[in-house]
Length: 552
Image (cartoon, rainbow, N blue to C red):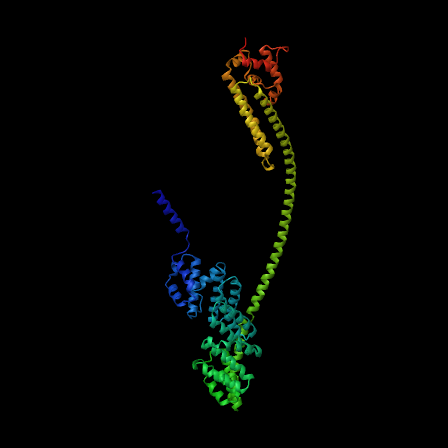
Protein backbone atom coordinates (compact mmCIF):
# COMPACT_ATOMS: atom_id res chain seq x y z
CA UNK A 1 0.00 0.00 0.00
CA UNK A 2 2.78 2.41 0.94
CA UNK A 3 4.50 1.54 -2.36
CA UNK A 4 1.42 2.63 -4.37
CA UNK A 5 1.10 5.84 -2.37
CA UNK A 6 4.76 6.70 -3.19
CA UNK A 7 4.10 6.13 -6.90
CA UNK A 8 0.99 8.36 -6.82
CA UNK A 9 2.92 11.15 -5.05
CA UNK A 10 5.75 10.89 -7.62
CA UNK A 11 3.28 11.13 -10.53
CA UNK A 12 1.59 14.17 -8.96
CA UNK A 13 4.98 15.86 -8.51
CA UNK A 14 5.89 15.22 -12.13
CA UNK A 15 2.57 16.59 -13.32
CA UNK A 16 2.98 19.66 -11.11
CA UNK A 17 6.47 20.29 -12.49
CA UNK A 18 5.26 20.11 -16.11
CA UNK A 19 4.61 23.69 -17.20
CA UNK A 20 3.14 22.72 -20.59
CA UNK A 21 -0.49 22.03 -21.35
CA UNK A 22 -1.95 19.15 -23.35
CA UNK A 23 -1.47 21.22 -26.55
CA UNK A 24 2.33 21.46 -26.33
CA UNK A 25 2.96 18.14 -28.08
CA UNK A 26 0.53 19.16 -30.85
CA UNK A 27 2.43 22.42 -31.37
CA UNK A 28 5.70 20.51 -31.63
CA UNK A 29 4.20 18.20 -34.25
CA UNK A 30 2.71 21.09 -36.27
CA UNK A 31 6.15 22.74 -36.39
CA UNK A 32 7.51 19.68 -38.21
CA UNK A 33 5.07 19.85 -41.15
CA UNK A 34 3.98 23.50 -41.34
CA UNK A 35 6.28 24.25 -44.30
CA UNK A 36 5.18 21.24 -46.38
CA UNK A 37 1.48 21.33 -45.42
CA UNK A 38 0.57 24.87 -44.32
CA UNK A 39 -3.17 24.32 -44.95
CA UNK A 40 -3.27 21.32 -42.58
CA UNK A 41 -1.15 23.22 -40.05
CA UNK A 42 -3.56 26.17 -40.12
CA UNK A 43 -6.56 23.89 -39.59
CA UNK A 44 -4.93 22.26 -36.54
CA UNK A 45 -3.74 25.54 -35.02
CA UNK A 46 -7.14 27.24 -35.38
CA UNK A 47 -8.76 24.42 -33.40
CA UNK A 48 -6.51 25.11 -30.39
CA UNK A 49 -8.12 27.33 -27.76
CA UNK A 50 -5.49 29.91 -26.77
CA UNK A 51 -7.09 30.20 -23.32
CA UNK A 52 -6.04 26.60 -22.61
CA UNK A 53 -2.35 27.35 -23.18
CA UNK A 54 -0.60 27.35 -19.83
CA UNK A 55 2.58 29.44 -20.21
CA UNK A 56 4.01 32.42 -22.06
CA UNK A 57 6.30 30.06 -23.96
CA UNK A 58 3.34 27.99 -25.17
CA UNK A 59 1.33 31.07 -26.17
CA UNK A 60 4.35 32.49 -28.01
CA UNK A 61 4.90 29.23 -29.93
CA UNK A 62 1.22 29.04 -30.89
CA UNK A 63 1.22 32.71 -32.00
CA UNK A 64 4.33 32.25 -34.13
CA UNK A 65 3.13 29.05 -35.80
CA UNK A 66 -0.31 30.55 -36.48
CA UNK A 67 1.30 33.63 -38.10
CA UNK A 68 3.48 31.34 -40.22
CA UNK A 69 0.43 29.35 -41.30
CA UNK A 70 -1.48 32.52 -42.28
CA UNK A 71 1.46 33.80 -44.33
CA UNK A 72 2.09 30.49 -46.08
CA UNK A 73 -1.61 30.23 -46.94
CA UNK A 74 -1.39 33.74 -48.49
CA UNK A 75 -3.56 35.29 -45.79
CA UNK A 76 -1.92 38.69 -45.43
CA UNK A 77 -2.28 40.09 -41.92
CA UNK A 78 -2.01 43.84 -41.31
CA UNK A 79 -2.21 43.78 -37.52
CA UNK A 80 -0.18 42.18 -34.72
CA UNK A 81 -3.06 40.67 -32.76
CA UNK A 82 -1.99 37.10 -33.53
CA UNK A 83 1.81 37.55 -33.49
CA UNK A 84 2.11 39.86 -30.45
CA UNK A 85 2.62 37.09 -27.82
CA UNK A 86 5.56 35.82 -29.87
CA UNK A 87 7.02 39.33 -30.27
CA UNK A 88 6.82 39.91 -26.51
CA UNK A 89 8.24 36.51 -25.49
CA UNK A 90 10.96 35.96 -28.09
CA UNK A 91 12.41 39.42 -27.58
CA UNK A 92 14.42 38.02 -24.64
CA UNK A 93 13.75 34.26 -24.84
CA UNK A 94 13.62 31.36 -27.24
CA UNK A 95 16.02 29.92 -29.78
CA UNK A 96 17.73 31.73 -32.65
CA UNK A 97 15.17 30.14 -35.01
CA UNK A 98 12.22 31.44 -32.95
CA UNK A 99 13.67 34.96 -32.95
CA UNK A 100 14.49 34.80 -36.68
CA UNK A 101 10.96 33.73 -37.58
CA UNK A 102 9.33 36.30 -35.29
CA UNK A 103 11.34 39.16 -36.84
CA UNK A 104 10.53 37.92 -40.35
CA UNK A 105 6.76 37.64 -39.84
CA UNK A 106 6.71 40.93 -37.94
CA UNK A 107 8.39 42.50 -40.97
CA UNK A 108 5.88 40.87 -43.31
CA UNK A 109 3.00 42.45 -41.38
CA UNK A 110 4.65 45.87 -41.62
CA UNK A 111 5.15 45.25 -45.33
CA UNK A 112 1.45 44.39 -45.71
CA UNK A 113 0.67 47.69 -43.97
CA UNK A 114 2.86 49.50 -46.49
CA UNK A 115 5.32 50.51 -43.76
CA UNK A 116 8.44 49.33 -45.57
CA UNK A 117 10.72 51.31 -43.24
CA UNK A 118 9.67 49.26 -40.19
CA UNK A 119 9.63 46.13 -42.33
CA UNK A 120 13.28 46.68 -43.29
CA UNK A 121 14.17 47.28 -39.63
CA UNK A 122 12.60 43.94 -38.65
CA UNK A 123 14.39 42.14 -41.49
CA UNK A 124 17.75 43.61 -40.41
CA UNK A 125 17.10 42.54 -36.81
CA UNK A 126 16.08 39.11 -38.04
CA UNK A 127 19.44 38.59 -39.76
CA UNK A 128 21.23 39.55 -36.55
CA UNK A 129 18.96 37.61 -34.16
CA UNK A 130 18.89 34.48 -36.31
CA UNK A 131 22.58 34.29 -37.13
CA UNK A 132 22.88 30.90 -35.40
CA UNK A 133 19.62 29.49 -36.73
CA UNK A 134 19.59 26.52 -39.08
CA UNK A 135 16.25 27.56 -40.62
CA UNK A 136 17.71 28.35 -44.05
CA UNK A 137 14.31 28.73 -45.68
CA UNK A 138 13.21 31.57 -43.40
CA UNK A 139 16.62 33.23 -43.86
CA UNK A 140 16.17 32.99 -47.62
CA UNK A 141 12.64 34.45 -47.40
CA UNK A 142 14.00 37.28 -45.25
CA UNK A 143 16.72 38.17 -47.78
CA UNK A 144 14.20 37.93 -50.62
CA UNK A 145 11.87 40.34 -48.79
CA UNK A 146 14.74 42.78 -48.35
CA UNK A 147 15.37 42.55 -52.09
CA UNK A 148 11.73 43.36 -52.77
CA UNK A 149 12.04 46.57 -50.71
CA UNK A 150 15.38 47.50 -52.31
CA UNK A 151 13.72 47.20 -55.71
CA UNK A 152 11.13 49.79 -54.65
CA UNK A 153 13.98 52.11 -53.62
CA UNK A 154 15.93 51.63 -56.88
CA UNK A 155 18.84 50.31 -54.79
CA UNK A 156 19.92 47.86 -57.47
CA UNK A 157 23.30 46.90 -55.96
CA UNK A 158 21.81 46.15 -52.55
CA UNK A 159 18.94 44.28 -54.19
CA UNK A 160 21.37 42.11 -56.15
CA UNK A 161 23.42 41.40 -53.02
CA UNK A 162 20.51 40.14 -50.90
CA UNK A 163 18.87 38.27 -53.79
CA UNK A 164 22.06 36.32 -54.48
CA UNK A 165 22.23 35.40 -50.77
CA UNK A 166 18.61 34.29 -50.93
CA UNK A 167 19.29 32.31 -54.11
CA UNK A 168 22.09 30.30 -52.49
CA UNK A 169 19.91 29.47 -49.48
CA UNK A 170 16.95 28.46 -51.67
CA UNK A 171 19.29 26.23 -53.64
CA UNK A 172 20.63 24.67 -50.41
CA UNK A 173 17.11 23.70 -49.24
CA UNK A 174 16.04 22.43 -52.67
CA UNK A 175 13.64 25.30 -53.50
CA UNK A 176 14.44 25.27 -57.21
CA UNK A 177 11.66 27.57 -58.37
CA UNK A 178 12.52 30.18 -55.73
CA UNK A 179 16.19 29.90 -56.69
CA UNK A 180 15.45 30.75 -60.35
CA UNK A 181 13.01 33.45 -59.27
CA UNK A 182 15.88 35.19 -57.43
CA UNK A 183 18.11 34.91 -60.51
CA UNK A 184 15.35 36.36 -62.72
CA UNK A 185 15.05 39.37 -60.40
CA UNK A 186 18.85 39.72 -60.32
CA UNK A 187 18.73 39.79 -64.13
CA UNK A 188 16.09 42.53 -64.00
CA UNK A 189 18.19 44.56 -61.52
CA UNK A 190 21.27 44.33 -63.77
CA UNK A 191 19.03 45.37 -66.66
CA UNK A 192 17.96 48.48 -64.73
CA UNK A 193 21.64 49.20 -63.97
CA UNK A 194 22.49 48.72 -67.65
CA UNK A 195 25.30 46.35 -66.63
CA UNK A 196 25.16 44.51 -69.94
CA UNK A 197 27.93 41.99 -69.19
CA UNK A 198 26.10 40.73 -66.12
CA UNK A 199 22.78 40.78 -67.99
CA UNK A 200 24.19 38.47 -70.69
CA UNK A 201 25.67 36.21 -68.00
CA UNK A 202 22.34 35.68 -66.23
CA UNK A 203 20.43 35.36 -69.50
CA UNK A 204 22.73 32.46 -70.40
CA UNK A 205 22.26 30.86 -66.95
CA UNK A 206 18.49 31.12 -67.02
CA UNK A 207 18.04 30.06 -70.66
CA UNK A 208 19.93 26.82 -69.90
CA UNK A 209 17.37 25.83 -67.27
CA UNK A 210 14.31 27.65 -68.61
CA UNK A 211 12.32 24.43 -68.85
CA UNK A 212 12.66 24.00 -65.07
CA UNK A 213 10.97 27.26 -64.03
CA UNK A 214 7.32 28.20 -63.60
CA UNK A 215 5.43 30.32 -66.20
CA UNK A 216 5.55 33.36 -63.87
CA UNK A 217 9.33 33.22 -63.55
CA UNK A 218 9.68 32.57 -67.27
CA UNK A 219 7.57 35.69 -67.88
CA UNK A 220 9.79 37.76 -65.57
CA UNK A 221 12.83 36.44 -67.40
CA UNK A 222 11.51 37.42 -70.82
CA UNK A 223 10.44 40.85 -69.59
CA UNK A 224 14.04 41.59 -68.63
CA UNK A 225 15.35 39.79 -71.72
CA UNK A 226 13.22 41.87 -74.11
CA UNK A 227 14.10 45.10 -72.29
CA UNK A 228 17.77 44.25 -72.71
CA UNK A 229 17.74 43.21 -76.38
CA UNK A 230 15.37 46.04 -77.36
CA UNK A 231 17.92 48.70 -76.45
CA UNK A 232 21.09 46.95 -77.71
CA UNK A 233 20.41 44.20 -80.26
CA UNK A 234 19.67 43.91 -83.92
CA UNK A 235 16.10 43.83 -85.24
CA UNK A 236 16.57 40.14 -86.00
CA UNK A 237 17.39 39.26 -82.38
CA UNK A 238 14.54 41.48 -81.11
CA UNK A 239 12.10 39.63 -83.41
CA UNK A 240 13.52 36.28 -82.27
CA UNK A 241 13.12 37.06 -78.57
CA UNK A 242 9.66 38.58 -79.13
CA UNK A 243 8.49 35.47 -81.00
CA UNK A 244 9.83 33.21 -78.21
CA UNK A 245 8.02 35.34 -75.65
CA UNK A 246 4.66 35.25 -77.44
CA UNK A 247 5.01 31.50 -78.00
CA UNK A 248 6.20 30.38 -74.57
CA UNK A 249 4.34 32.71 -72.21
CA UNK A 250 0.58 32.28 -71.57
CA UNK A 251 -1.50 35.27 -72.63
CA UNK A 252 -2.64 36.04 -69.08
CA UNK A 253 1.02 36.47 -68.04
CA UNK A 254 2.15 38.63 -70.96
CA UNK A 255 3.62 42.02 -70.07
CA UNK A 256 2.34 44.28 -72.84
CA UNK A 257 4.71 47.08 -71.88
CA UNK A 258 7.61 44.76 -72.75
CA UNK A 259 5.95 43.86 -76.05
CA UNK A 260 5.30 47.55 -76.75
CA UNK A 261 8.95 48.38 -76.03
CA UNK A 262 10.10 45.71 -78.52
CA UNK A 263 7.83 47.11 -81.26
CA UNK A 264 8.91 50.65 -80.37
CA UNK A 265 12.61 49.79 -80.82
CA UNK A 266 11.74 48.07 -84.14
CA UNK A 267 10.07 51.28 -85.27
CA UNK A 268 6.63 49.69 -85.47
CA UNK A 269 4.88 52.42 -83.48
CA UNK A 270 1.28 51.48 -84.29
CA UNK A 271 1.88 47.93 -83.01
CA UNK A 272 3.59 49.41 -79.99
CA UNK A 273 0.57 51.64 -79.29
CA UNK A 274 -1.89 48.76 -79.67
CA UNK A 275 0.21 46.61 -77.32
CA UNK A 276 0.56 49.21 -74.60
CA UNK A 277 -3.16 49.97 -74.65
CA UNK A 278 -3.67 46.33 -73.58
CA UNK A 279 -1.44 47.01 -70.56
CA UNK A 280 -4.26 47.78 -68.16
CA UNK A 281 -2.93 46.07 -65.01
CA UNK A 282 -0.76 48.80 -63.47
CA UNK A 283 -0.45 47.74 -59.84
CA UNK A 284 3.12 48.66 -59.06
CA UNK A 285 5.07 51.87 -59.26
CA UNK A 286 7.48 50.32 -61.79
CA UNK A 287 4.69 49.19 -64.09
CA UNK A 288 2.99 52.61 -63.86
CA UNK A 289 6.06 54.71 -64.60
CA UNK A 290 7.22 52.37 -67.37
CA UNK A 291 3.78 52.41 -68.99
CA UNK A 292 3.42 56.21 -69.04
CA UNK A 293 7.04 56.91 -70.04
CA UNK A 294 6.82 54.48 -72.97
CA UNK A 295 3.36 55.79 -73.95
CA UNK A 296 4.79 59.34 -74.05
CA UNK A 297 7.64 58.15 -76.35
CA UNK A 298 5.22 56.32 -78.66
CA UNK A 299 2.93 59.38 -79.00
CA UNK A 300 5.97 61.56 -79.59
CA UNK A 301 7.19 59.29 -82.40
CA UNK A 302 3.71 59.32 -83.91
CA UNK A 303 3.66 63.13 -83.79
CA UNK A 304 0.81 63.27 -81.29
CA UNK A 305 2.58 65.71 -79.00
CA UNK A 306 -0.35 66.75 -76.84
CA UNK A 307 -1.03 63.13 -75.88
CA UNK A 308 2.69 62.63 -75.41
CA UNK A 309 2.80 65.59 -73.03
CA UNK A 310 -0.16 64.27 -71.02
CA UNK A 311 1.44 60.81 -70.70
CA UNK A 312 4.78 62.31 -69.71
CA UNK A 313 3.13 64.63 -67.17
CA UNK A 314 1.39 61.60 -65.61
CA UNK A 315 4.77 59.84 -65.49
CA UNK A 316 6.33 62.81 -63.64
CA UNK A 317 3.49 62.99 -61.11
CA UNK A 318 3.80 59.28 -60.30
CA UNK A 319 7.59 59.44 -60.13
CA UNK A 320 7.70 62.54 -57.92
CA UNK A 321 5.10 61.14 -55.57
CA UNK A 322 7.07 57.94 -55.23
CA UNK A 323 10.32 59.78 -54.54
CA UNK A 324 8.55 61.94 -51.96
CA UNK A 325 7.12 58.85 -50.25
CA UNK A 326 10.54 57.22 -50.18
CA UNK A 327 12.29 60.14 -48.53
CA UNK A 328 9.34 60.84 -46.22
CA UNK A 329 9.41 57.32 -44.85
CA UNK A 330 13.19 57.45 -44.50
CA UNK A 331 13.26 53.82 -45.59
CA UNK A 332 16.31 54.38 -47.72
CA UNK A 333 18.36 55.03 -44.62
CA UNK A 334 17.05 52.20 -42.46
CA UNK A 335 19.95 49.90 -43.24
CA UNK A 336 22.43 52.70 -42.67
CA UNK A 337 20.69 53.53 -39.38
CA UNK A 338 20.82 49.89 -38.34
CA UNK A 339 24.51 49.72 -39.30
CA UNK A 340 25.24 52.83 -37.19
CA UNK A 341 23.40 51.29 -34.25
CA UNK A 342 25.39 48.11 -34.67
CA UNK A 343 28.63 50.13 -34.89
CA UNK A 344 27.70 51.98 -31.71
CA UNK A 345 26.96 48.67 -30.03
CA UNK A 346 30.35 47.37 -31.16
CA UNK A 347 32.10 50.47 -29.76
CA UNK A 348 30.28 50.01 -26.48
CA UNK A 349 31.25 46.37 -26.56
CA UNK A 350 34.88 47.35 -27.20
CA UNK A 351 34.84 49.63 -24.14
CA UNK A 352 33.28 46.88 -22.08
CA UNK A 353 35.92 44.45 -23.33
CA UNK A 354 38.68 46.92 -22.35
CA UNK A 355 37.19 47.19 -18.87
CA UNK A 356 36.98 43.41 -18.67
CA UNK A 357 40.62 43.09 -19.81
CA UNK A 358 41.76 45.52 -17.09
CA UNK A 359 39.75 43.64 -14.47
CA UNK A 360 41.11 40.32 -15.73
CA UNK A 361 44.68 41.68 -15.51
CA UNK A 362 44.05 42.79 -11.92
CA UNK A 363 42.56 39.42 -11.07
CA UNK A 364 45.47 37.60 -12.74
CA UNK A 365 47.94 39.75 -10.77
CA UNK A 366 46.12 38.97 -7.52
CA UNK A 367 46.08 35.27 -8.42
CA UNK A 368 49.82 35.37 -9.16
CA UNK A 369 50.49 37.04 -5.80
CA UNK A 370 48.32 34.45 -4.10
CA UNK A 371 50.17 31.64 -5.91
CA UNK A 372 53.57 33.11 -4.95
CA UNK A 373 52.45 33.35 -1.33
CA UNK A 374 51.12 29.80 -1.52
CA UNK A 375 54.42 28.58 -2.96
CA UNK A 376 56.32 30.35 -0.18
CA UNK A 377 54.09 28.71 2.45
CA UNK A 378 54.45 25.34 0.82
CA UNK A 379 58.23 25.66 0.72
CA UNK A 380 58.17 26.52 4.41
CA UNK A 381 55.87 23.58 5.11
CA UNK A 382 58.10 21.38 2.98
CA UNK A 383 61.19 22.30 4.98
CA UNK A 384 59.27 21.67 8.21
CA UNK A 385 58.01 18.32 6.92
CA UNK A 386 61.51 17.35 5.78
CA UNK A 387 62.83 18.05 9.26
CA UNK A 388 59.98 16.03 10.74
CA UNK A 389 60.70 13.21 8.33
CA UNK A 390 64.33 13.19 9.35
CA UNK A 391 63.32 12.89 13.00
CA UNK A 392 60.86 10.13 12.13
CA UNK A 393 63.53 8.38 10.09
CA UNK A 394 65.92 8.42 13.08
CA UNK A 395 63.10 7.20 15.33
CA UNK A 396 62.25 4.30 13.04
CA UNK A 397 65.90 3.38 12.60
CA UNK A 398 66.18 3.17 16.40
CA UNK A 399 63.07 1.00 16.55
CA UNK A 400 64.42 -1.22 13.80
CA UNK A 401 67.69 -1.69 15.68
CA UNK A 402 65.71 -2.55 18.81
CA UNK A 403 63.77 -5.18 16.88
CA UNK A 404 67.02 -6.67 15.57
CA UNK A 405 68.43 -6.82 19.12
CA UNK A 406 65.24 -8.45 20.36
CA UNK A 407 65.35 -11.05 17.60
CA UNK A 408 68.99 -11.89 18.42
CA UNK A 409 68.15 -12.25 22.10
CA UNK A 410 65.24 -14.55 21.38
CA UNK A 411 67.38 -16.58 19.00
CA UNK A 412 69.79 -17.18 21.86
CA UNK A 413 66.91 -18.26 24.10
CA UNK A 414 65.77 -20.75 21.49
CA UNK A 415 69.26 -22.28 21.59
CA UNK A 416 68.87 -22.83 25.34
CA UNK A 417 67.38 -26.32 25.71
CA UNK A 418 66.56 -25.76 29.35
CA UNK A 419 63.54 -23.55 28.51
CA UNK A 420 60.24 -25.35 28.78
CA UNK A 421 58.30 -26.22 25.65
CA UNK A 422 55.36 -23.89 26.44
CA UNK A 423 57.66 -20.90 26.85
CA UNK A 424 59.65 -21.92 23.80
CA UNK A 425 56.44 -21.87 21.76
CA UNK A 426 55.72 -18.27 22.80
CA UNK A 427 59.27 -17.22 21.92
CA UNK A 428 59.07 -18.95 18.52
CA UNK A 429 55.79 -17.15 17.69
CA UNK A 430 57.35 -13.88 18.67
CA UNK A 431 60.37 -14.67 16.48
CA UNK A 432 58.09 -15.38 13.50
CA UNK A 433 56.50 -11.98 13.86
CA UNK A 434 59.87 -10.30 14.26
CA UNK A 435 61.34 -11.98 11.20
CA UNK A 436 58.28 -11.12 9.09
CA UNK A 437 58.49 -7.46 10.02
CA UNK A 438 62.24 -7.27 9.44
CA UNK A 439 61.99 -8.87 6.00
CA UNK A 440 59.03 -6.64 5.12
CA UNK A 441 60.92 -3.54 6.19
CA UNK A 442 64.01 -4.49 4.17
CA UNK A 443 62.02 -5.22 0.99
CA UNK A 444 59.69 -2.20 1.07
CA UNK A 445 59.81 0.36 -1.75
CA UNK A 446 59.94 4.05 -1.12
CA UNK A 447 56.20 4.51 -1.54
CA UNK A 448 55.49 1.78 1.10
CA UNK A 449 57.95 2.87 3.79
CA UNK A 450 55.15 4.31 5.91
CA UNK A 451 53.33 0.99 6.00
CA UNK A 452 56.53 -0.82 7.07
CA UNK A 453 57.18 1.77 9.76
CA UNK A 454 53.62 1.46 11.00
CA UNK A 455 54.25 -2.28 11.35
CA UNK A 456 57.32 -1.51 13.42
CA UNK A 457 55.26 0.77 15.67
CA UNK A 458 52.66 -1.96 16.10
CA UNK A 459 55.32 -4.54 16.85
CA UNK A 460 56.94 -2.41 19.56
CA UNK A 461 53.50 -1.83 21.07
CA UNK A 462 52.93 -5.61 21.13
CA UNK A 463 55.84 -6.21 23.54
CA UNK A 464 53.54 -5.79 26.53
CA UNK A 465 51.36 -8.57 25.09
CA UNK A 466 54.45 -10.75 24.77
CA UNK A 467 55.39 -10.08 28.40
CA UNK A 468 51.84 -10.88 29.52
CA UNK A 469 51.68 -14.08 27.49
CA UNK A 470 55.09 -15.13 28.84
CA UNK A 471 53.96 -14.47 32.42
CA UNK A 472 50.69 -16.36 31.95
CA UNK A 473 52.48 -19.37 30.48
CA UNK A 474 55.01 -19.47 33.34
CA UNK A 475 52.30 -18.89 35.93
CA UNK A 476 50.35 -21.88 34.69
CA UNK A 477 53.36 -24.20 34.55
CA UNK A 478 55.43 -22.90 37.48
CA UNK A 479 53.04 -21.75 40.18
CA UNK A 480 55.73 -22.21 42.84
CA UNK A 481 57.83 -19.58 41.05
CA UNK A 482 55.16 -16.90 41.41
CA UNK A 483 54.20 -17.99 44.89
CA UNK A 484 57.78 -17.63 46.04
CA UNK A 485 58.20 -14.15 44.47
CA UNK A 486 54.96 -12.89 45.99
CA UNK A 487 55.93 -14.34 49.32
CA UNK A 488 59.13 -12.29 49.20
CA UNK A 489 57.10 -9.11 48.51
CA UNK A 490 58.01 -8.71 44.82
CA UNK A 491 55.60 -6.31 43.05
CA UNK A 492 53.64 -7.32 39.90
CA UNK A 493 55.62 -5.08 37.54
CA UNK A 494 58.81 -6.53 39.08
CA UNK A 495 57.52 -10.06 38.51
CA UNK A 496 57.15 -9.14 34.78
CA UNK A 497 60.85 -8.56 34.22
CA UNK A 498 61.65 -11.48 36.59
CA UNK A 499 59.80 -13.69 34.08
CA UNK A 500 62.02 -12.35 31.28
CA UNK A 501 65.12 -13.14 33.41
CA UNK A 502 63.71 -16.60 34.05
CA UNK A 503 63.41 -17.43 30.32
CA UNK A 504 67.03 -16.45 29.72
CA UNK A 505 67.06 -12.76 28.80
CA UNK A 506 69.98 -10.65 30.03
CA UNK A 507 69.67 -7.42 31.98
CA UNK A 508 70.71 -5.22 29.07
CA UNK A 509 68.17 -6.90 26.78
CA UNK A 510 65.43 -6.62 29.36
CA UNK A 511 66.11 -2.92 29.82
CA UNK A 512 65.89 -2.33 26.07
CA UNK A 513 62.96 -4.67 25.72
CA UNK A 514 60.80 -3.31 28.52
CA UNK A 515 62.00 0.27 28.14
CA UNK A 516 62.10 0.62 31.95
CA UNK A 517 64.20 3.66 32.83
CA UNK A 518 64.55 2.47 36.53
CA UNK A 519 65.61 -1.07 35.56
CA UNK A 520 68.86 -1.17 37.54
CA UNK A 521 67.29 0.32 40.64
CA UNK A 522 64.37 -2.08 40.40
CA UNK A 523 66.76 -5.01 39.94
CA UNK A 524 68.60 -4.02 43.12
CA UNK A 525 65.34 -3.82 45.04
CA UNK A 526 64.31 -7.27 43.80
CA UNK A 527 67.70 -8.71 44.86
CA UNK A 528 67.19 -7.24 48.32
CA UNK A 529 63.68 -8.71 48.53
CA UNK A 530 65.03 -12.10 47.50
CA UNK A 531 67.85 -11.87 50.06
CA UNK A 532 70.66 -11.78 47.48
CA UNK A 533 73.90 -9.92 48.20
CA UNK A 534 76.57 -8.73 45.82
CA UNK A 535 78.65 -11.88 46.28
CA UNK A 536 75.76 -14.15 45.48
CA UNK A 537 74.91 -15.40 41.98
CA UNK A 538 73.46 -12.89 39.59
CA UNK A 539 69.72 -12.27 39.50
CA UNK A 540 69.21 -13.94 36.12
CA UNK A 541 70.87 -17.19 37.16
CA UNK A 542 68.98 -17.24 40.47
CA UNK A 543 65.60 -16.79 38.80
CA UNK A 544 66.31 -19.43 36.17
CA UNK A 545 67.24 -21.93 38.91
CA UNK A 546 64.15 -20.88 40.88
CA UNK A 547 62.01 -21.61 37.83
CA UNK A 548 63.51 -25.06 37.32
CA UNK A 549 63.65 -26.14 40.98
CA UNK A 550 61.58 -25.38 44.02
CA UNK A 551 63.47 -23.39 46.61
CA UNK A 552 64.73 -25.24 49.69
